[in-house]
Image 1 (cartoon, helix red, strand yellow):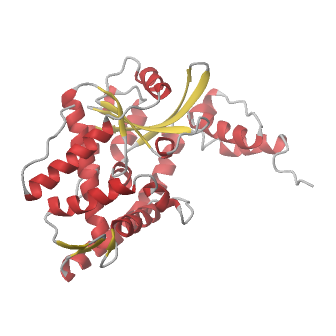
Image 2 (image 1 turned 30 degrees about the horizontal axis):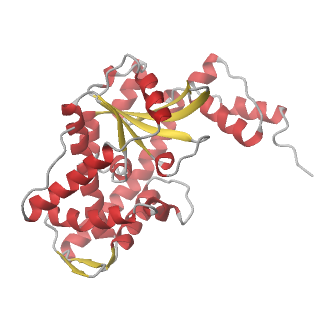
Length: 324
C-alpha cells in the first residue's frame, strides 16, 4: 500500500493527515489465526481485499464471531449462487457465515460481500444508506489484498467513510462540545437508523481505547471538508449556517427512516441468501443452551424459512420447559 504523506498546508494538509492515519491502521498486524482463516476463506478466489472489523477486533474473544467485508471487483468474482448475486446487486451487502478449522479449533465469522463500486457508492456523500460508512469510520484492518492498486482503492473508500461520519457528527452533535460528544451523538443516531438492539453504552464502547484517534480525526475532517469551526481547548464548535444545519438534519430524518426499511429488507433477503445461516443459528443455540440441532441441506440453504422447524426441534429438546 502506498503510505500517503501529509500535504503542506490547510485543507490538503488535513486530508493528508487523515489518509496517513487510516493507512497506518489498515496495515496493523492481526492475530495469526485471523490471517490463516482469511487465507482459507479466500482460497482460489481473487477479491480486491478482505477487511476485518467489529467487536472482536476491538476486544479479542476466542469464542466470538469475527466480522469481515470481502471487496471484489465484480460480484461474479465471489463464488455465490446467481440468485444471491442478483440480490446483492439490488440490496447490498449479502452476508455469509463460515466455520473454518485453524490450528485445531473452529473459527467462525460473518462475511459481507461488496463490489468496489458498491463500496465507493455506499461511502459517498449522496448515499442514503448509513450501513457501510458507519462501520468503516471505525478502526479496521486490511488482512488480505490483491496488490497496491487494490489497497489504494479500498483506502480511498475508507477515507470517504470517515469524511461522511465527521460531517454528520457536526450536524447531529451539540452546538459545541468535545470530540467525544460529537462522536457519541453520531453513533447513537447510526444505531437507531439500523434498528440494532443495543444498550445505552454501546456508542461509548466504540470510542473506548480509541479516544485519541477520534479526537485527532474530527477537527481534521472538518478542516479537509472546508467546514468552519472554532476550538477552545478540548471544546469544538462547528459553524454550520442555520440553513445547512436544518437541511442536514432533514436529510438525516430521511436516512433514519430509510435505514429501518433497508434493514428489514435485508432481513427478508437473508431468508434466501444468508449462506451458512442455519449453522450460525444452530451454533448460537448450542452456545447458549448446549442443545445440538442436526441440519439438513434445505435448512442449511434457507435458515429463516426453516425457523419454525428449528423452534419445534428446540421444543422437543425441552428448551422451552419451565424451570424450577
